[in-house]
Each structure stands twice: as structure tokens, then as C-alpha cells.
Image (cartoon, rainbow, N blue to C red; front, side, top):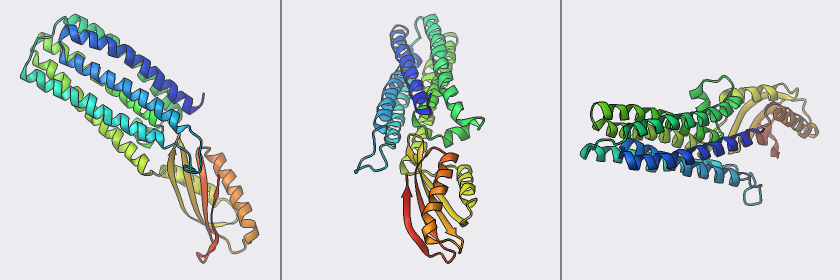
Length: 313
């Protein structure tokens, strides 16, 4: 299964899980009058909307390139992912904090505590399964890289968002489980505190997502390690005297545009330049199939342009 199909599978699985959890949470929050449970229900409802956005973004990003968009529509997934982050912030986080503050001002005891706890445990199990599906898919493309670094380097918007959402959901459910126990055994105010903590958690997750997606929308470079690998491939060609720079920009769907600046040795003949650039192009594509387009900036040792920068797709 391709990486893109795996991401869609993770999104669909998360959507199905959240729909089931949302319905259960809303029913239980009505009976129990729990602020934490209501906050979790709103959180799950927001997650359902988020996953619909991700599916829309994935569909639109797959549209073919045309004259108006010569590099395709891959960056659509960044836009829709950004909407997900904003929705999580304003719907999930803001409502949770508001509901918690409201409950502090007007505290009320939780009803049917045992029902709340059972539903929370079931929700943790369902969210845990969804998280494992997303995490397993995520690890296939990032190997043994540390989780934080892998999240920072990831350009698969759908998978990144689902993994962060599921992580936040698991932590949030654990917080509400503990706050419900404390509200039942000590004081109802702990239910409100649990709701506020869930809201703060969602603020942190949404801000992280917003920042990462902002960098991708603006035009983030590929990691330095990847650039160094590609630079070594170019430098190994016999006509290349020096690699001046390797620059890239993420284009969505896991693809990136690559710009290669090189100085050629004095013996290079103009008639051979294009042939050698095509050879380098093929070697780069073998090294990294995620390259969408390649541009070359070819100069001689005196830094005079030998050929206009040209594109190889």
C-alpha cells in the first residue's frame, strides 16, 4: 500500500472511531451533567469535522497539474490541514476552557459517575486503536527517528494531524477520567478543572499544528540531512567541480521541488551539459523518488552562466 493510501486509511479509521465515540459521549454527558464529558464530546465532534476536512484536502490535492497550476494542487492538503488546526483551537479548546470556567462559577455534582467511567474506558480503548493505526503508518515512513523530530520533519499532513489528534484525545480522556474520579470522591470543582486542562492541551496541540503547517504553506525546505545526501549524488558526477547549493520546497503529497546550483569543470563542452544534467537528474530520482521537479543552475568556474536554468520533470 502506498504512503498516500495508508494516510487515507488512517484518516477513515479515525473518522469512524470518532463518530462512534462522539455519539456515546453526547448521550452520557446529557445524563451525567459532566463538564469534562461534554468537553470531550465537543472535542470528538471537532475531530470528526477535522477528518472530513483532511479527506477533502487529500482529494483536492490529487488533482492533476494544468496551465494555471503547473506544479499541481499538492499544497491544498496544507490549507485544509491548517483549517483543521484552527477548528481544533476555536471549537475544541475554546469550548473546553469556557465550559470549565462556567462549571467553576456554577459547580454541580456529576450524576451516574459509574456510567461516565465506563464510557471513558471504552473511549480510551477505541482511541488507542485509532492511535496505533496512525502511529504504525507514521513509523513506516520515519523509521527510528525520534518522535518529536519525526513530527517536525513530517510533510504528510493527514498523518501528522491524525497522530496529533489521537495523542491529544488519549491524553484528554485520561485527564477527564482522573478528574471525574476526583470530582466524585473529593469535590465537583475537579470536573471543571479537568475540562480546562483538556482545553489547554488542545491549545498546545493546535498551536504546534498551526506552526508546522504555516512553514509548509510558506515553503519549507527539506531537512539538511536529505540535502546533504542529494548534494553528494550531484558532486559524484565527473563534470561537476562544485555544488554551490541544494534548495527545495515542499509541494504537497510528500513531493518537493528541487533546485541544484553547480559549477562545472573547465573541460566541459556545452553540447554535453544537458546530457550530464539528465544523468544527474536520473541519479537524484533514484536516490529520492519524492522529487517532483528539478531545476539546474549551471555555471563555469568563473561563475558565468553556461545555460539558462532549465527544468527537468
